[in-house]
Each structure stands twice: as structure tokens, then as C-alpha cells.
Amino acid sequence: DDLAERWDETAGALSEGAYPDIARDPFFTTDTRGLLRKYLVAARFDLQEALARLRATADWRREWDVLSYYAPGEARRLFGEDSNPGAEMYFADALASDRAGRPYVAGRLRLANSENMHPWRHLRAGVMVFEMMAIKVLATGRGPASYILDLGGVGAVAGTVSGTGGLDRGYDEGRNPYYQAGAGSGDAPSERLLEELGSLDNGFATLKAAMKIMGQHYPGMIGQIYYLNSDMVFWGAFKIFSRWVADRGSVNFEFLGESAWRDKPMSRLLDQFPPEQLFKEWGGAGPALDTDAFLARAIERYEAEAAARAGTPAAGAAPATS
Image 1: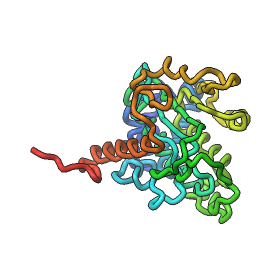
Image 2: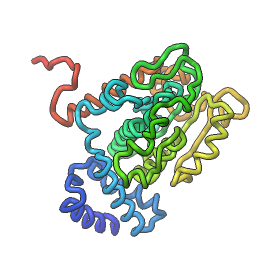
Image 3: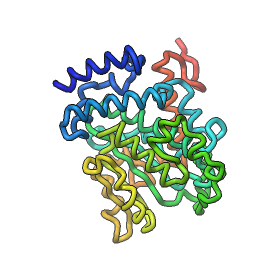
């Protein structure tokens, strides 16, 4: 109650100055009290810290231009290689939920081609996915989402929706022309964001920036991360980047697969997800990931929702009939 009162005052001041669009920002208006609770928990119930973090998020959302994510056509643009070169997206809304009705993000890491990933364009697209997931979490009010990331092969085919990887082969980040040209610092959206997130000169730096954004500006939105079919190299890297999660205690990580060193077998997913809500490749009875077709389906949903908000038909949708 105290934070709600203070936040009302702060939001009012922001609407008249630094962030005039705050009153139409879904992040702050979908479930305001639910959002405030998440910030309080992240701040260990320190009201002043929670309020400062909310203010910092409002400033970041204005500078990052988060509201542009909601425009019709934006999801398709951000995922597309032609319209957003180097996006290399490999994860999106699974369009399904766990046994408690909480949504989840699905990803296939090997769809990403590290030789073609533009750090800031990839980050821009990736944050859109978690922005939309955060709104879904707030709207459903059933708790944080999950993220299932499959690190196994995708078959002898290349990605066609966004990520240009696949083919079950390795990619050499050292050959990335964007990194070689200095895009990690030269293509940053602003000097302040460059100072905050650092120069994204490699994949680890980009991942670290993404996790920093998630920890600072989307607290409590992801509660569980499953890594499927990991090898020991990724497991070792995880020991490093898991330290970057600001609210590490509120996010649970599990490695699932057939090898004895992994935490549990992949069938563990069925304890958390109904079979019809889990992709066939992961032991469920739902739709297939179908290489990267799951990304195409998510893009269509993002666009349909954007069109509904704007009151216009989604691009490619059939005209309504009487």
C-alpha cells in the first residue's frame, strides 16, 4: 500500500515530464499492484529501492522505446533477416502453458548463427519476446513464466524464419562481420545505454546485457529455466553467466536430458507441463517445433495481438465476412 501510494505520485510526475506515455504503457497498467509486488520482492521489501528500480525501469523503457514493440508489423520486422539483419532469433512465446496456466518461452539455440548475429539488433528483438511474455504474466496473474531452451541439434536443415543457423554444424563467432566492424559499440542505441550495458563485442557480452535487462527491468517474470540436451561445454559456461542473474535466488535452473550428469531426464517436463501443452520433440503431445516453424507461429500471434490493439486486421489475415 505504501509503495502504491508513492508510485502513484512518481508516475504522475513522470507523465508530466520524463515519460509522458507512461499512462498507456501496458507494463505499468496491466496489473499495477502485481507489478509493484514483484519489484518489492526483488528489492527485498525495501520501499525506497523498489521505487528507485521502478523509476529506473520507466526511464529505460522510454529510452529503449519499448512501446514501439506494440506497433503492427514490428514483430515481423524484428525477426526478419531482410528487415533486421543479424537478428538471429531462436526463441519466442511457446503459445502454451504449464499445469498452473503460466505461459512459457521456447527456444532452440542452434538455430542461431553466431557468424551472422548483430548484437544490438538481436538484443532488440530478444527483449521484445520477454516484453510480451511479461505482459502475459501480468495479465494471467498466475505467477512467473518458464523458459525451455533446447541446446540439441535441429537436424540437417537451416533456419528460415529468423535464425540462419541449423544444419547441425558449428559456427565461428570470430568470423562475425558485425563484431569485426565494431558494431558492439558503434551501433549502440545511445551513449548512455552503451555505458550501462557495455560494448557487445561477443556473444557472452550480448547475453550478459540481456540478463542484466531481465534482472533490472523484468523482475519476477521468469521463474524457471530448463536447459535441454546440453553438453559439458555449455554447462561450464553456465557456471559463469548464471552469476549475472541479479535475482538468482528467484530463478531456478535445471539441466534435463539423457546423460547421467544432468539433473533429471527430459520426461521431468511432463511433471510441469500437460502433454498437449508441450512440443512433440520434448516428449509432449502438442504441436511440433518443426525446425523453426514455432517461431513463425509466435510471430503470427504477436502480429494478431498488435493488430487487435490497433483495431486493424493483421497483415496477411483474411478479410472479415458478414
